[in-house]
Length: 572
Ligand code: ARG
Image (cartoon, rainbow, N blue to C red; front, side):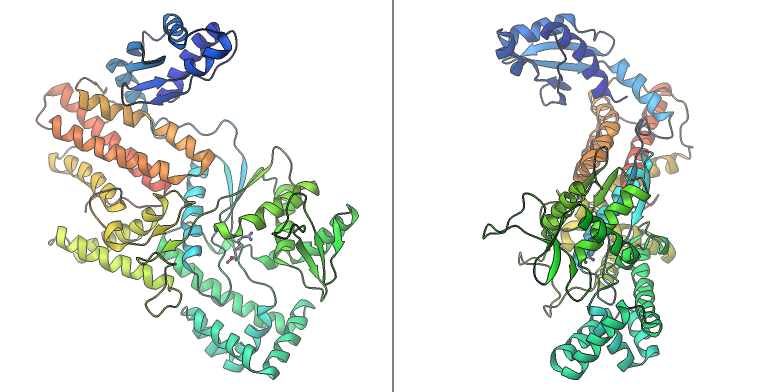
């Protein structure tokens, strides 16, 4: 159990006795003491007593002697808690002895679907897909670590009307040339060339239309060409995933086409439930509570007049499949904010249709845009969309230069490994360390800086601790009791003890910037400790205890970064 929870539980008992009913003591870290509870203030009106009076009463009743040295009332009725060093030492010794660092798996494991990445076949992945991939990967890692059954769903855009023109373009190019372009990741020029012909050439447009019909009616030759487009694009996406070091594999592609056979039954079911309306050119559902600017109800398009199904129909089929067939109770959609309303509408329809009900919940894990230094959407210098591989390669190249400067005598292979960890880590961390619903500016200088809230800073902090052990020629300490006495040890211990609470907070909110911010504070607090408390020069049990604190810090940094998908090289 986390320290915060431990204190809260004790205070809760005292509050309950004073208030005559359950009260959340809202225990938080504080500038004025180690922890503070503000819960007496809102009780004042209800109990008709001054808040200081209530707080004093609670302090008198709370059994905290084994955990705190100071429990006092301050200001208008805050309760300030200072944790006892021996209690911290015991807590950290237990944490250090645990391979899970004191973070127990969830007592309520769920089946969670993470719908993420989801690029479109024969189209370059854009920075939005990068964000989805990075955030989704962190979600998968963290939820998996907490014992949930996590299903990765890469909702590839692999179906729909554009495939008519794409297949015709493929035929024009010749199959082997097309396959080559796609597998080397020349997706944008492939897509654009098809688009140009479609817009300019009526005969091509007609062929494309017929091709869509052939595809939808299951024509074998057309399906074969379609499969080729999908397979070549998948191959390319897998190289990007590999470069990014994310957990997605070829087993996780559940593209839109995966749901094709479910679309007719889903439509029938919506019809039987009386939810389907004919809107002239399509059969739609109008979920309650969604209207456009003109006040008219907004539709989810299910089936178009030509028989094709809409993007929304596939999402409805996917929800029904995920809750009914896969037994998922938590459905996460890591997709940019512009699609928020689409998902809210899809969830509303699914609830009305009875496919989404408690305990199952669906959450849109939205995110903002990545901006260039001009404050506009990140674009290439020529104004086009940025090629993702190019961006990742540049990150690694820049990190390699840094690594060389820092470590002129490291062998090339080691530099390459560090460069990959630092370059890719920097890109991921820049993304995960900002509140995901905000936009952020893509800035090489900042993300690769060795100071500040960056991946290189944290990776360096980790490597520096590992080097203490290397230099002293000692193994990782095992079973050494941790003794806390210096104020800098106390501060570090408080941070370390907070790890579990931060991780379980992020389990709920998927706000990874909270974990990132925590790791950054931990690393700076460690610096303070290392500055004030000699480690190798200390004697006997103090030295052992401080080494154990160092090791525990390194392990928390490593595990925390690992949950964000960021590698921690042993030396940098
Ligand atoms: N392929 C879509 C895009 O590029 C994202 C798909 C998101 N997932 C979903 N279930 N609709 O915008």
